Length: 237
Image 1: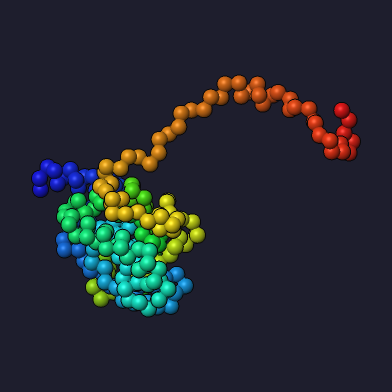
Image 2 (image 1 turned 90 degrees about the vertical axis):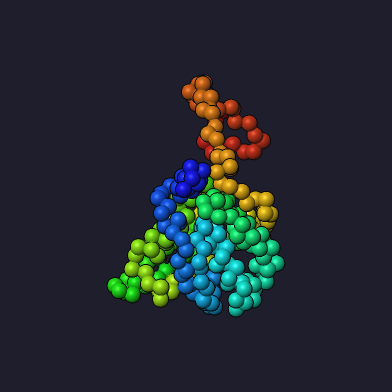
């Protein structure tokens, strides 16, 4: 591995805030999923074989569910509002290789959350993994590394099938970190897909407020009562 490639992988690890050995495995393991929308009935079978980022994973599930066509409302919504952007994202990811694919800042997907659930064939216990759409950086709370750890190092079998439910928000009803632009009626174009390492911090700490004279202001009496309305009972000027 060249020094340039090593540096790029260090940037990927910094994004995720944890070891990324499972992201570097090639070829990536395909996983079968029954995918549904929250409160939906249809559950088409989808195969996920690209683990690029949380946003890309949710995009993949949204697009695959729309392609199946079992939910006509969702298919129409995706085709009208998101299909063109998804085609652009796939093309850009296809042209990238190695660590560059994982450094791409994929725009937020149409939905915010994908909850993966699978039953352990050996112990009959159930495992759940939440994948949340993430802002540009960091991705430490997105959940991708946790599900890959289960796929590669848990009791996961190639015959196991995840049940995946897609949500507009997290299960508490609160948008995780930052809402997708699509839910705000905004459609970022392909120019929004940039290397995450080139994006500046989302905010800067404001300077300390000037608290001089605060004690004097708090101890000062309020202005006199001035109004044309009747005085409160028992009140005397």
